Image (cartoon, rainbow, N blue to C red):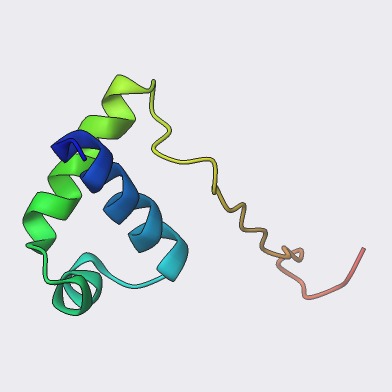
Length: 69
């Protein structure tokens, strides 16, 4: 397996794990700085998306007087 493919797998597993780079690195036995570098590099090569597992986060917003609309 090529290095790029191996790191792509690590980056995808890291993102889907919800762990920090340091936590994932400790568990997988990889350097967290190298992991972050490959996330950046693969994202740059693919136009900003390293994986198809993007997660949207929504936050409920209320007016400053506390009333709900």
